[in-house]
Amino acid sequence: MTPIYLDYAATTPAAPEVAALMAEYLTLDGCFANPASRSHLSGWQAEQAVEKARSQVADLIGADLREIVWTSGATEANNLALIGAARANPDRGRHIITSRIEHKAVGDTCDWLETQGWEITRLQPDNQGRIQVEQVAEVLREDTLLVSLMLINNELGSLNPITQVGELLKEHPALLHVDAAQAAGKLPIDVTALNIDLLSLSAHKFYGPKGVGALYVRREPQVKLEALIHGGGHERGMRSGTLPTHQLVGMGEAARLAQENLQADAEHISDCRTVFLQQLDPQFYRQTGTAADNWPGIINLAFPGIEAETLILALPDLAVSTGSACNSATLDPSYVLTAVGLPRAEALSSVRFSFGRYLTREEALKAGQLVNQALERLNS
Image 1 (cartoon, one colour):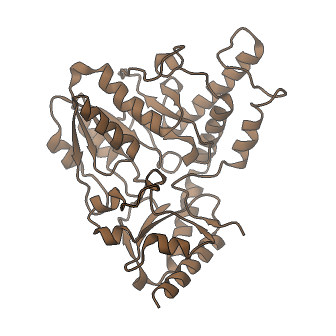
Image 2 (cartoon, rainbow, N blue to C red; image 1 turned 90 degrees about the horizontal axis):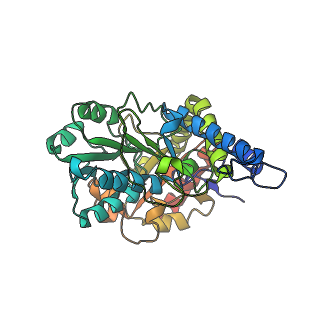
Image 3 (cartoon, rainbow, N blue to C red; image 1 turned 180 degrees about the horizontal axis):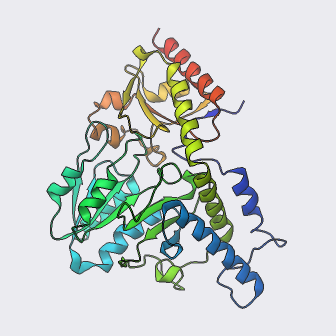
């Protein structure tokens, strides 16, 4: 029996339409040419496919296609945004504002920048996992180069007030970088309306292939970045390397489908979450992050008295995780959970359940029943 998959925050399956389209750009009878090979028709056709995908990704976030820079994923996009901006704008200031519960792709990059002489202010989230715009305003300085905040937290589903932060920074030269890995394709995003300068995307979080992502880089006014990868001057000099046509058309198709299904996906996911929680006895768990505007696709539940790993072992028919896949190799509690005030023991008893497009209502109901049955056994 294939486990019921409740780890959509870690990765999503590629949509069938995405996988079918990607296959057309891999083999001899397809459009497999290098999109930078402009001396023959096959290369031109590959480039056209790449640019169509670029336009589809741009449409998903309200951008111009010329503002999309292909990367290997959100991790590289975050690194390019932070390090690229820091290196390219040394005269604009050496102060960066972020939070204590960003993804490690941002947190670890800020740690490294700190060793290189940049000053990092890490804001403390509230117990819902949110940063308030007033906190940003309080620490904003003349030499603040950049503010980096995620839109949806990958462990709690909490939303940061990016709209208000964007409004705040309209009167300040600091750049606004948003890690939208968990949000793109799930929430409506308009980078212009939100006053976002840099935004990171990952295809495999919205039913596209792994190993590909993008960074939105504002053109008006132009955001200056220094490349991290050199050799060929691809992507307008910001990211060299042969473009993986099959992955890019897959990301483009995933973006198109996400935009088309935005409302239907959100309603379905919210229903699955409700059905799942209805099967659980409230005496067995506590939810971390219960704000009404949280993204319904991610919930984090603590099960007092039961270690998370013990519960997961008791649920062989479910695919769930204790938190971010990037932290799965450590036995320490999630830094996100401890940062929002959970005691160590409660953090170690917490499990993240995340829902997605291909989870059926019946599977959500069955999953909730299986969790409740396991809890009854473990608490008896």
